Image (spheres, one colour):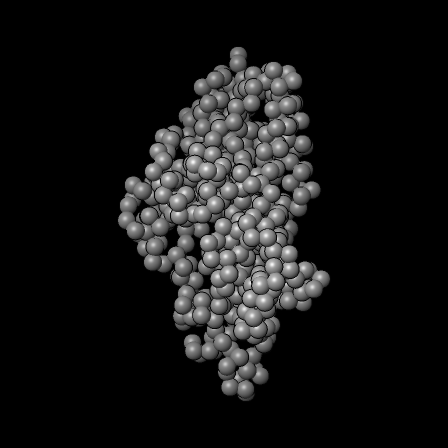
Length: 457
């Protein structure tokens, strides 16, 4: 009886799962394995919201496997050691897994290859599982990656995607391999009150429903703060509960401007993966435009605290930060606004904002979180690194009636539309009755400081 191991990482699904399919084709029995890695905790990346969503995903994956005669084996410990131990227990000849792109994922793969190779166990790493197109598949003639999105998008759009596969009907798991109990969100604390449920089943249902109701209007409505018309699929993509290949193909089959705009956003995700795959140090260091004059945590502690708490005095910024705490998620346009305000108006190091996002975001990952922050901060791939998003103008444009602001900043519930993004312009007697702070900084002063500092670098 031949056995193979499938190591699940950021691909917690059964539909369109090449490593699992390959393992089932290569062996009579398969061990579906997830390892709870202490390195994630030591690095500070196991935030409560993501732990809760992960627990949902693992429970859903285990339930799906059990309906097919199998089960999920969960272990805790250093990944390479635990995978090696499981392979030895069941006599596996191969271990299959999806390719990752972060420096941590690359080191994990090297350690696995070394440990397994000592006993003659083959490590099979599969591309285009976590992304729609493998990071190294689309490269320019003179570099190992694209540094600008538009030419990447043109090349990426012409790539033929692999065929998607349904979930397997049967998964046979050897009885001899044991695991520990599945984690549960019920044992966790510090979870955002309105955190969504995780898992492949929920993600697939959500995508099918949104395809019918929201995809066709996505192009014109995805920046509408009050309308909340984004797909909200990012947590399911982050944990691999949904296949990006399947999402691209289903959107293209649907057709229309909304589907095209949605596919473009999926391409942005792949773009960031290919950047970080080639430049893993960009998770902690400026990618392109080096900048050393940011205000530090000590220099800007009060401003940073006000930003985190949603008490900056700029309503659309505060609304976004309060949504983040309540849902563990934030509207995509709001993410741009709060990041621009921190880095370019308050002039605070982007790494401080990126770290706080990772503490709360259910979809927070090193690839998209860090590189999106760098894009906004002007140190990353943005071709206009000096652009500054004005929160007042942006609020009026994307939340013209103040509905989003009032939803998250109830202090402004009764403020007229014309003042809701500029409450400091209210008559003095009405301002005095508001339990809402004055702006941390005048926007003109923040812009002048940003331009001055940029000129010195």
